[in-house]
Length: 536
Image (tube, rainbow, N blue to C red):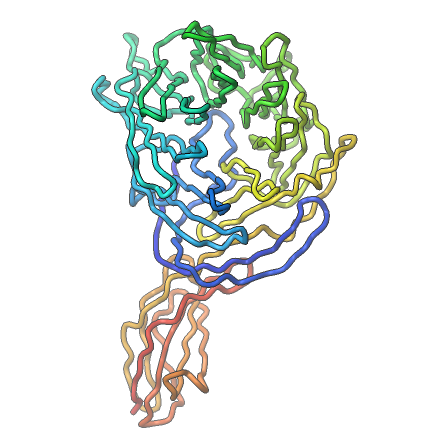
């Protein structure tokens, strides 16, 4: 998916805080944070968890730091600078620090926090199909973003990493597994087939334990094509979920056996249609492990008789016991009919080993419901005017938190899980006034020229950045702007203004700032450097 190029400048941060519980009760207020330097960049992660055919990389991550701050990792915000954006927020959502992390290999794959270190998984294309090319790299950092080392995977039958899919990471002790995908070297028939991959690392020695990239079959964990990949450790076993369109054509769960003896598997959702047809009518949104079951969520059209990949989809939850001894159980949470719009690919997060939150968009409405350890719906389905993104929600200070980003605005959403009422399933309207919203102020404009004339002066300035909607000029006979007068200009294109009816032979002090309007509210830059002129 082509993403809008990022754009950068230094600015100041204002926080508009509206606190609310997404379950009926609203508590609203606003605070202004102390000005902080921030980076403005252009793009969006809103609804990027959603896909119709194949998934795209997760670029937005949220994690709690050891000093109980929130760290936001945005992989695609500074792409033209070949850097990853990292921002730290305090518990009141005030931006306190920004770090720019240089790229490793040119293609981002995934970010991960194992509780002791940060990791970035990256890759690069291998169009000449050379086994000497490093196609994947795992890089290790300490919590101050000091680079501690890396380990590479070379050749690996990989022409393009992450093609028509993504990468996800999980760990157990010193073992770290990456589930990803690639297009492979060209076949004798001239095809670059796509499949999943599983790579296992030792993080204490930063070495590769195993890398499975050969063409095989499901008994070895091989899925082709694989349009989404999930991974979790369960004890010593690596458990994965793939969205396959051919071999097999299903949402399939695999679990490795000991000593490289292959894997066990269960088809969670068999997909109708022709083998290898990329249009499946399915997307997978999450995979978690409960105290008793493996849980998989997604959306799907109706399978079997009357199957159409373009039909209306419904949200499903599938479960299977952790020993893979029973037939997977599939439940549909929604019952949208033909003619309805389909729900988005859902998000899914673990509250504790017996409770999970399932969230999805239906148009502009966010829906969420609690799921128990067996995969059953165990609360009302709540509906609220809010948004999802590719940021998987986390548990922070007892609340479920995620964020959305669009240009200069970052919004943090929260749900208090204790307010999700467990009862017979019904749809309940929740209320939200606004999220915790961070708005970046525009960069200051500078004065180009001030020229004097009879009883007047003319001010010229540099045009404001993208998104500016106007300017404000102040002038005064006093250098501290006592008794100042203010002129507001409501056109971003204007870069020159004549101010008249002034006192002749007097010296005037002048400054200018720009503003942008967001949701009807003006956000001002800092003032320009003060200038002076003596009128004629």
